[in-house]
Length: 326
Image 1 (spheres, rainbow, N blue to C red):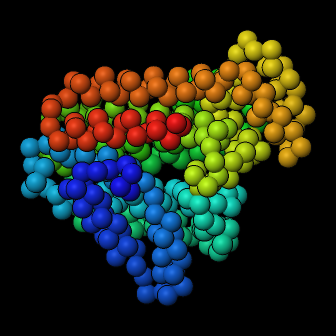
Image 2: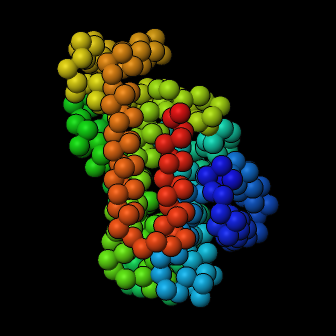
């Protein structure tokens, strides 16, 4: 976590979120508690609760509402963990954050129920808060968008004709929407004005898209020990992402060969050739440029926000999202 955040107050708040989450999900069942401990052992970047905490600093009641902000941050991260458990079942992922996934270690059925358990804990946390109705609606709509994004991704498996625009619509539901609501939710709690909240939502979307695009790039240039998940797995499952989509829609001489390999069925014998051809097509450079474009948009929007500690923390965080590809 120190790699991403250096502000002592923010790190202290994130530690409170982790402690609150551990206590909140504890149950009377020793086996479930053991699997939850295993889940939390892998840690995480804590980006979404950090965004919420940073967003809260733009409001007038930043200090007064700190406990509520901590609780809401805990709910957001609990929701995120629940979606990861369900994602791993859908994707048959063997690794998560560098260790064996819950679905692989305990079973798919167990991971689904564990994800449902975390969702229920998220909802219970929200009942402890007095939040504006508009924020409650936005939170519910975010969960809806996440689900629809996952559904659309399943519908488009092995779809070599998917456009980058349609793919980004899917990504905006799966990743960017949670970034957006995380950054804005803290501002809601601390009584920020509507104009600032709107700008924070836009910044969150830009950051979420940049984050996902970089994740896509890491499937082609990442190290499994650093990335903490199986590489090539998305491609083998037919979940086509930014580099491949750009290669398929390019004027590259490798475009037809990539399409032919996909049409004949992606498998362990041809996946390396597809990756090599995508690299040769120039799609990785295009992908990196897209990530920088969204990164720059976020920084540009940030200049329109008040100068305060929240602004400073965002300026420090945004470049870190790109450092994963250096």
